[in-house]
Length: 247
Image 1 (cartoon, helix red, strand yellow):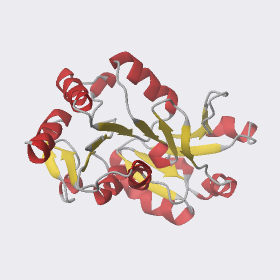
Image 2: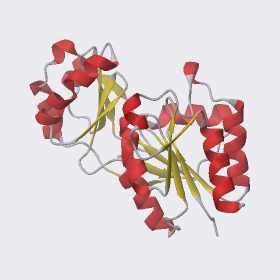
Image 3: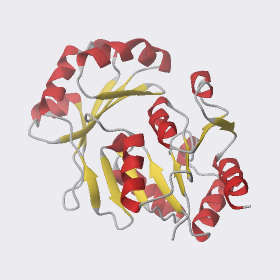
């Protein structure tokens, strides 16, 4: 029986500058899995960019939580959970002041037979028949995104997170935390051995369903005020969990 689950965010956590993963973190994850434990990725990214990363580093995740919990794929890349954004939400984007938004990106729904597309707002208005699973509003700076997030939350009915200089929009009831709880229930895991690590506000829901949460030294100060231990990297977090749970 697999004994423990470790969930890692990608950008800013496992993946650093230039889309690179540190060797120490790679080795820690591989040792964790070789010891019979489960490793899951939880990210706001869509499938193809995660696929490229996994192939590049020869990683094998037991599940992938994508698009902030709107899509979960198993180890065989089969869909085990999926939810899309309602069409009314896309229409509500028009109620947001887009003059301060650098770019509006919409992700088309994942399918094993049809590649996902990343559409900009102008393109989407021409091809509005697409089913959308995620939306991201890109701002010039994190401060501008921070100033606008409350307005976006008021304009939309779906889930809204800030991730650095982006505001991510996910379908109702979707979050990384809910996706983790779905997997914990599905796999009948021990709730006392669930560890997570993340560096941004879309990761807080993971902290709420874990028995041990970690955030990064470089994360925004507000993240250090969450109920999470502050570490320098994924390797340090995994080593701490191993020492506490297995030795």
